[in-house]
Structure formats: C-alpha cells, structure tokens
Image (cartoon, rainbow, N blue to C red; front, side, top):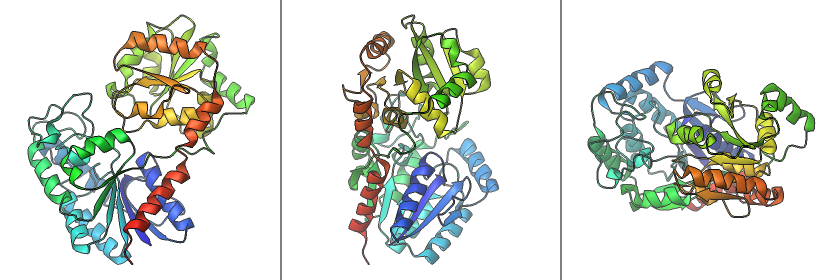
Length: 406
C-alpha cells in the first residue's frame, strides 16, 4: 500500500503520531509519505513540507482579520495535491488540518476527484465547528446546528473582529461530506460520541486511542538519574512532602492552571504540587508550597519525574484523551483527574481517582487518599499496557487494509 499522511507538524505532538505510523508502514514494506506544515523533516520517513513560513504568516494574518482559518494557502495546497497525484496514494490519512498551512476546499476537491479512501484522525474538534478546536469549557453546542455568534472568537484560531463561524461551518460541512469514502477516527470514546452528534456523524467513526511508548515510559530504575533530577530542579525544597505532579506542554486556563493554583491552598500540609512545562517567569511567580519546572523534551527526565511522583494529576477541563496520565501510569504512578471530557476513560479504581469538574475540595481529599493508600505500580503499568503504541498503530494498519482496494 501507498499511504500519505497530512498533518500540521512533524515529530511533535500529533506529528509524532503521524510519523510513528509512517515508520510502522515502512517497516511492514509499505510506502509512506508524511506531508507537514511546520517542523523539520523526520528521519527515516519520506516527507514533504506544505508551503513555507511566509505562507503560514499570511494565512494566520487572514485568519486574524477575517476569521477564515483553513481557507487560505490555496497555492501551497495546489502544490501539495500535485505531489500527492505523483505519489498515487492508495490511502490518505488526515490529521490536524488547521494551523494555517492549507486550504481545505482545494484539498477535499482533489480527494473527491481522486476517489482515494480517506482516514481522518480527529485530535480535537476543529473539523466540525465553525471556529474553535475546543468548546467544552465554554459549554457551547452551537456546532450541532451551524455555529454563529461564536462565544470563542478570540480563542485559537483567534479572530480580532469578524465572526465567520456560521459560514465556516457551512463550507466545512459541504467540503467534508463531499467524500463518500471518508472514515473518521478519534482517540477517545468521548470525542467519538461528540463527532456522532455533528455533521460528520454521517460518516463511520472508529475509536483508536493514541498509544503510549512503553519502552520510553517505564518505571525509572536509575536512582542516580532521579537524584540528579531532584537536585537540578530543586525538588529538595519539598522537604519530604509528597509530590503531586502535573505536566503540560503549554499551560493555560483550559489545562487547569487556575485550578491547580487554587488547589494548592487546600492541600494537606504534607502534600505539594510540582508543575512541569512552565516558563521561567511563571515558575518564579508560583505561590509558596508549589514548585515549577520548565518544559523538558527529555524523556529520561520525564520518566524520572513520573516515577518520583506520588500522584500525577490533571485538572484539565478539555482533553480528547490525556496522554500525560497514560505516561504516568506507564511509569507506575497513580493518577487523579476531573471527570470531564475524555480524561476518565483512562482511570480505573485500581490506578487512580476522578472527581467532579471544578470541585477542588474533593480533589484535595482525593490527593490525600491516593497518597495514603499503598502504591500499585504493577496495576498502573498493566493499565498502560492496554494502550501500547504499536498495538494501536496495528489497528490503523488493519483499517487501511480494510479500506484498500488494489
């Protein structure tokens, strides 16, 4: 098979998923091509950059001024489809199409003309809304009927003045439903259910979780590494307190930043929150009783931090899966999260607890309860094994083979 993947980035976040699947395809003797909007060419995978930095800036400016994210970069998209025509894919696998790098109308017109089966993994909700990628925290359901009067116009992809959400919704619906051979995939049951309530619910939906790499994320058995991480990031200042670890690549209100700050004041005296992924300035501004660690791309350091923690907690209000919880479980650490969106799908009573969204006193009590009970690294690891990366990729390959028509 010849499979082309299209995603906004390569190598990081959703780009890691796309790159890894391409690697698996190449290992199995298939042909893969990764088309990406930003980042660097991945090693070992044939790739093609869509457009240029200037294209991205122009697209972003148009989105800011006219609220038309996803409807610019027509020239870059025409060049992309010419390359796709030369590659002659048997399957096209779409990922994040937002991010200011292509025109969805041009892409879907070519996909319709080519008649190639399309798999589209939705990593967020942008595909079926008129503007936003996340809406749960805003408690908005306008996407079910057509958008308009968008309450999140200033949220990514931000528009300074205009609200074109109703028009965008109609044009997305027209373009995306023009493909009769479109199969959708979501990383969680929650997102799958949301999609079925949208206009995309007219197409088949499969739930295929993003997988966790159990070789990279495992209990850290290197005491010297843990000691080095403790020293490097000043964790000795915890002075014997139990560590509640919370990790994010970017901290914002949606990720529970305000909730964590408020929770710190409700915790038992022997518990302390450590946040990973903050800027140096944000680390310095944390209140007494909290510690901040800048963003790290070192898997070894993350593994040591997850292992050293007593609990990994996520007070995020919106997640389509919740990979940091899976990474913590793979390292043998129990977890706590809100019962919001997709997060509770990861948690069973043996490996953690969930609390009602926004109930910080319940969260404080649950943190104490988890720290007081015996740790169960084997149960945590067993739970993570149900999301093993290569097993999830094998499900995608199976889906390709199901759709493939030689």
